[in-house]
Length: 421
Ligand code: HGY
Ligand code: MN
Ligand code: MN
Image (cartoon, rainbow, N blue to C red; front, side, top):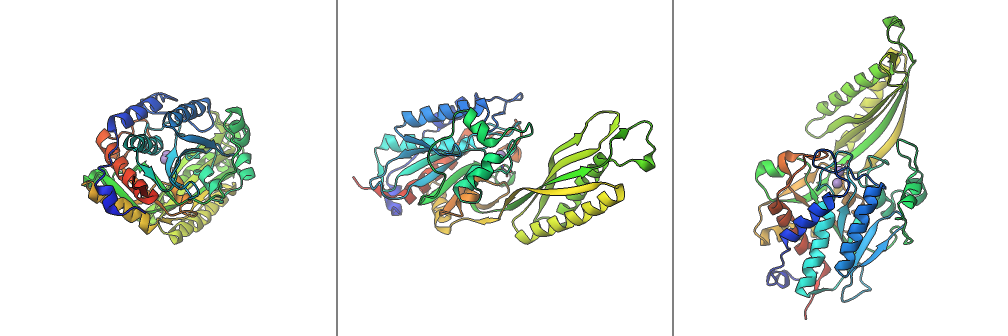
């Protein structure tokens, strides 16, 4: 670690306009229909974004390695190449109606740190690797944070390859189709530390008028896919008393999810975001419903309680309506406490740079959650307008982006260590 005074005198700052231009250039790939992005993982747009990132890494003098999950690592050598790298990054894939910053801010801020370091001519002791994690969002292929999960040893490569999207396409086949299966093994190598900058995706920082979030913890999540099986029948001629309506069951269980989360407030949230009914025809009573429940809390006991209450309540609803019900785990993430030394480095950087800052628990899941299982990890958060994210109207200010990236810059360099000329 570098002593703080080695950092202070250097006046390390990024080029805010260059970072903003890169964000806007990346946002042109996989545009949405309302100003945001639809650049879902393993699509041709994802591949185009990867090629642009690869070019920028090469322009910045980085050596690029891609692993068997398509994770991309741009490496800037350190004075001692045998030391494990300090990693910094996030993801370039987006939701179907995603914003321009959820993920790309963290990847392009990491790139901006390299570009700025190159201009100073400074050398770090540890190598620095900037990262684009494949399939953070988990909307096309569940679970979220899939590839950092394989890297951290939480999921196997074969299991990840076997995951299918709504049209039955396999993850492994799609990764091969876009030409981004690398030959490097996934994980299994020492990492000195991992840092991730991400937009808050909630209203806390903006409401408090704070520029930088120092993330101390992350809440856990449980995604449960529920399948209800009833009986297709005519919506006009079937008596109400003899209907076995899977759509009605889904509606009642969706309400139950909301009530369970409210009953554990303020330590819990819950919603149904993904749902399908079959055959989805106006005049056929739905014979099948498939939907995914997203429960989250910083307290694992609350997550477990919500799971129990859901299964009990949904079982009663299914029984009353004569439906069969089955459950499948679609994603799970333990609550996370980040590394105190890395968190202190973030907090000290924000103070040193004169930015308003506050400790924060991340409401959303991030690749840093899995990375915290295998390396000292911390996150920096940037406010977003109205706390809005997973919406094409997602917006941040250039000033917020610059402040959080400068903090990330200091924390990464301090952890990587500066080599005196
Ligand atoms: O679901 C999440 O928390 C993340 O945005 N993928
Ligand atoms: Mn994200
Ligand atoms: Mn997201």
